[in-house]
Length: 199
Image 1 (cartoon, rainbow, N blue to C red):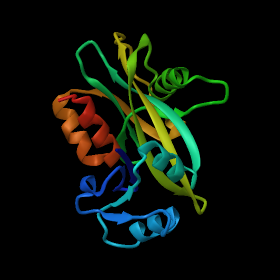
Image 2 (cartoon, rainbow, N blue to C red):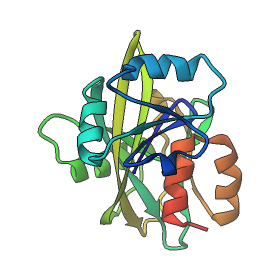
Image 3 (cartoon, one colour):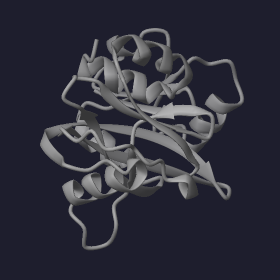
């Protein structure tokens, strides 16, 4: 199953209706994806579900409706086991950014974390997961796919937020501080961190 967020509302791509719970189900053959998104945006629906017997085919058909942007970022722990967060545009977030041309996904993840936080002595431990969300830009729906890597740093150097990207604070947060930060963040990051099991 895929979980894609449109604003704060989840969209499930599933192989059957059992996983859809109380969400409204849509048949892509009868209702266009963008029509469903507009309905989701302008109603009190809690979420939406698209069902396809072939999950991968369903995903490919779904994303055909959008301009796709790929990004990469890091779940970065320090020697104390704290997790690196950024504060951008009034929300706690994780460092990530757009993959540049001729750049590998892992190279982009390392570069973005370094640029956004000024962190050094950074290494990738492993690939972790992907997140998906949809947003609107200039009257166009954008599908953003973000690749996440587990990373480690043992540096104690001062973090430097990338102010030109709207980042006003960078910090390693312990488990209690993370719980506070997650009260002011994005739903897709909450789901990501639940899978990461940081606390």
